[in-house]
Image (cartoon, rainbow, N blue to C red):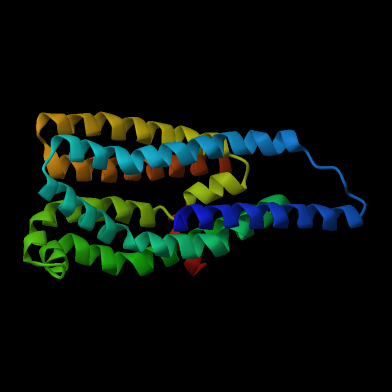
Length: 247
């Protein structure tokens, strides 16, 4: 109920702010808005949201159906621990995303590339120490939850590697969204979701906890690597080109 109410509140606030912005534009004499353009963006973004849900839940459901209850518990703790660093990505994206859109609208490619590199460097700098700790000392980290959770050490290391790729590639997803390349992002997520489904199918063969971790980490890394490729191809931006920071 709490989740439903918060989602409903977000929907109503978004709708209200949307119409408030349109009314402000109307006062300046520009009352036209292309809803067809909105739908062209909303379609791929809606598909991305659905595919992300599949990528998140299918490995866990497959493990619950064909694994043991102990493996499900270990996997739940490992994946929640590994994804703690994604909070850093959300924080940086909330600031960088509107700036991406503004610079793209102005046609300032150099500033857009510099901002993309700076945001990637910031995310990597903040997330790397935590993720390296998860990769190198997974037993110690999970041992904080109790001695029995140390059995999920391998899964935590695998998940942390996937999150490291997520952090190291930066805000490539938002770069594509804010520059009108939602369809390219949808292609990346679709291929990643397909790989998650295929790898989740291997859990039926008894691969268990390790395969469930791979079914989350590999698609996450694949999605971000493909998105980085599209950013370089269509935007001519290399998010990890840190040499720009020293010019």
